Length: 484
Image 1 (cartoon, rainbow, N blue to C red):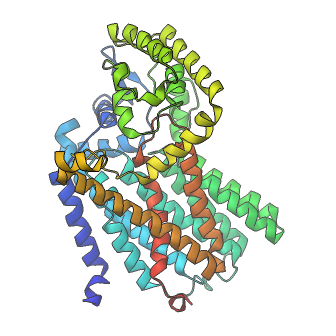
Image 2 (cartoon, rainbow, N blue to C red):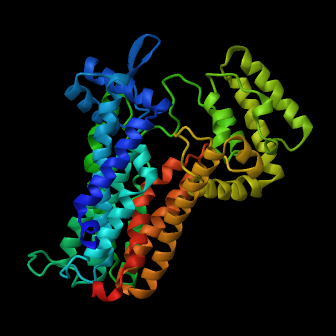
Image 3 (cartoon, helix red, strand yellow):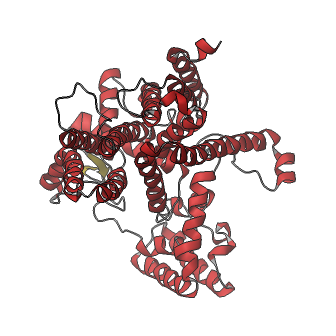
């Protein structure tokens, strides 16, 4: 039995069945799905990377080209577009997700190595593979036409390269004896490759360069202790160049087509001439931290009416403030379009609320968003409410719903807790792996901090941290003698 479960093929078959279950039983989509499909269809049929604006196909840069390029490939292969091609898109995505499981397992084995010439730790590889294969959160998103599975894959692959660069920089013996490269050149080349992979990930999710920031910080501390800051500069430059090489064609396209050398995507996904509701978003940041509230307020903006009664009480400090919001929304609901004047009123409310309680806006609410995105049941795209409390009422209304939600919450807690516990254990037991552990931990902290600055926290945005979390978590099951 032990031999069966240690066989990677068995794990991959189990992963295939789990993802096929989600694809056939719980396929889902979101507003972004339709947006990506429209861009891809126009790109394929009209050779314009754009959207239909007022009946005219207009070039845009509000989404990066990685996922639309994947959709174009699937449309070309299947002869279908849009919703008709979603099943084939999802089937391809679960293959990508299985590949990311193998990448995660490789990262775990790399963390467990004492030197690169030591034999791969088959135990940690197998455990990490099973943890990744059975993770329901990444598996669930294989059944959603969104960027998540590709973001997870490229993040895991980039972590492999950057961890390898860190370990080679810290330990000269962490290098194959047959290599003809010097240590410095080997680390630079590995950093360059890591930067290229980060660039590929950036074509799917614009926050991917956070990986390079984390790696550069840890490399800086490492080379500072080694007394060689010149090597830190060359490594950081190699990463940046690798990323820019991949992103340059996209920036060049934006320069030629739109008149601006945009390497990423606009911070606010707005169409040309569209109002960016800065005031409305600033007001949201003074009270919003739960995903369920996004469905009731921000995701209705300019599409549906918004009721003041749907807004949580914490959004109002006084009854008078609620009346002011109700008056603004009454005007908005007349034509379902936020005007400049209405947005200015929300901006004024945001300034007043922040001046009264600055700690709430800048500390407590970001902390609440961090807790939300890490400890949510992660079932927002499944046909489950996601509500556990109040216990008695939910139990009476829908016991199955509550049990499924509770199960996902416990599973999520298991993955997060295992990763944190194992990172601390690996830090104590294997000093050679400390730079790599610091890099992975810092990446997750920086990404979380970045996400807390967004007014609409979505748990799916930390799925890219799961390769690092699972690779670290697998170290708990490793006997140190096996890696030595």
